[in-house]
Image: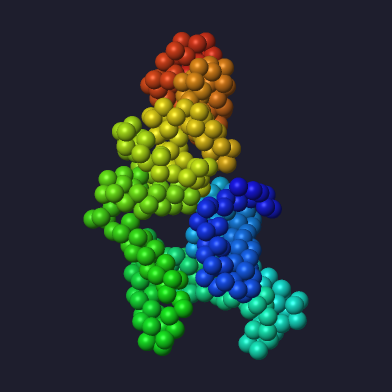
Length: 373
């Protein structure tokens, strides 16, 4: 992981593997330039999303994976549809503008094949910059163009736009695949396959009769069926992107099952949705991963300060035997004031805090919560 323009950038092994695969497939100077250009313009693309999100006051992070990069962001207020659409558009927009500027600076005409095809470098930059940027604006999910259309559609059919867009995206992708196949242009088969697989996964996850109570339980069910990779992707997506709702039932996931789910996750642990970050931190407590719970919940609190995340840090510190830190975080939780009833329940019931309930400072905190109610 490294920081760029104030954003955390996580590079997953799959991203490095993709660059190596491109070099191996082409085995030429063009392959080297293409791998480098895709790497650079993917980062620029995600920076476009992240900067646009930060302009709204949101906290953003960037992850680079196999065949896809993504910028996850946590808003500190409800964003309008226009703001969300702008965040989606900013990525490909910046990618196209910067890559075209680079080509012009190289003395290349971006719309003249005889010009940009002169050298491996210009050809690679043309493909990795404006072409991939434009492909991202195709109006199908999970591409940026699909998200932009979905936000607009949500103004017409609120609450149903995602379901409609997933089904429309699958239909358009199948039609596009058939058209390319019949025209003898099979070079986009990997891209088409990636789109279709992702769309089918989205369809499955949003179909009520197939979807368990929550994303965590859906991942647990998927894991039980032996699909470790799919369960891992579901959890990463749940933790990385803001979710409309979080199920309190996830707090009661059995320890053995929670342990298997946590083992699926990459480290550093994904973040982006405060509600599911709180679920994960609690599951870490359930499985006895107190140090991980303390650090993860503290990081979550740093991004989006709230009472319950601070309470998790207090519980983890108490379990580790650090009473001073536990009491300090209980004070912080009380001062934050976003869930006084939740904090009162935590102090009264959390097993990790049993030995602290009679501590004068904790009694004072508890009394202040009762007075506030």
